[in-house]
Amino acid sequence: MMDPMGSWRSRPWLLWALLAVPAAATLAGVGTYAGALGPQDPPRPGRADLVGRYEDGRGGAVTLHADGTAVLEGIAKFGDEGDEGGYDPEKRCDDKEATWSFLESRPRWSHRVAFGADCGAWMPWDVEGTAAVPEIVYWTDIPGHPDSRRVLTRR
Image (cartoon, rainbow, N blue to C red):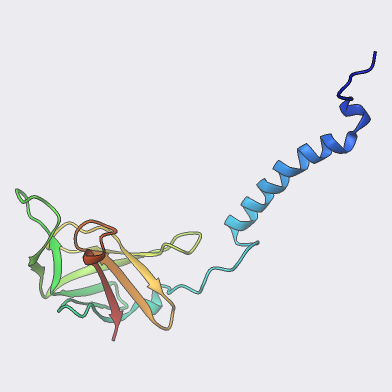
């Protein structure tokens, strides 16, 4: 008696199609993550591109030196113990010597700068822009809230 739906043996192309689709999707995902397929990432600033003075237009500035030292001026800092937490605009990191390091990621869409400073708790700051016009972004309160985003541009 013949199977009314037919047999996969009578349609070998169906079996190959069912195997080829997930295999192609897997290869495309791996190729895209590795950077071999898809649009190329825009050129992102590297460590050497970040050296210089950055200002946020609100009185805050960061100067990054090639030797890994930095000077923080007028940057809002994290609340002290006992505070409700978050950044307090009245508390600033003024004229503080610090160290900085470049945190490179693969794929290249989330480079970061980490600071070692004694004036508060710091999360790594995002690096945006291009090698010619780098920007450093930090948040002064709730990440994603438009009023708390601070963009430091190189001057």
